[in-house]
Structures are given as C-alpha cells and as structure tokens.
Amino acid sequence: MLEDSIYKAINSYIDCNYLDVTGDGRHFDAVVVSNEFMGKTPLERHRVIYSALGDMMKDQVHALSMKLYTINEWGKLNG
Picture 1 (tube, rainbow, N blue to C red):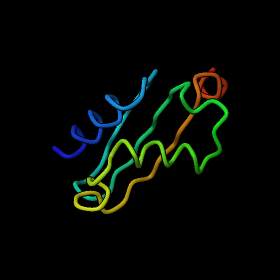
Picture 2: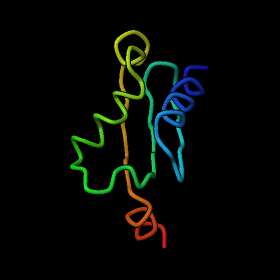
Picture 3: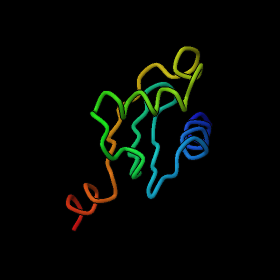
Picture 4: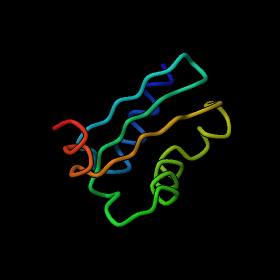
C-alpha cells in the first residue's frame, strides 16, 4: 500500500514522535509530530516532508494534506 510507503519514507527521514498516514490510494493525509519542526515556518516544515518523499510526490501521490507539529504543539492540542 502506498500509505505504508509514505509512512516509511517519512519515518526514516525524520525522528517522529507520532506519525499517521491515511488515504484512498491517490489522496493522502499525514499527521507528523516531530521536534525537527522546531523553529521552522509552515513552508519549511512542508519542505521537510516533500524531501522525505522525493519522487513519490511526482509519480505516485496526487495530493497530500499535512498537519505538522512539534511535540509541544501537539501536546497543547491534545492535552
């Protein structure tokens, strides 16, 4: 499944505290929680994920919705 490939690519590229990827085969949603996002703008955070996915974004993934948080931000949302 492509969701598994996306998950593995992100998880191997950055240290994730939480990672969830869902989708229908072409459109995907990812929630990524990592302190590697600290000090990064939303655009910079998206670039990290695009770098992790590389050519998958050109060839296989039609759309990817991303919610990207630091551990502290995630805690505030879920605490």
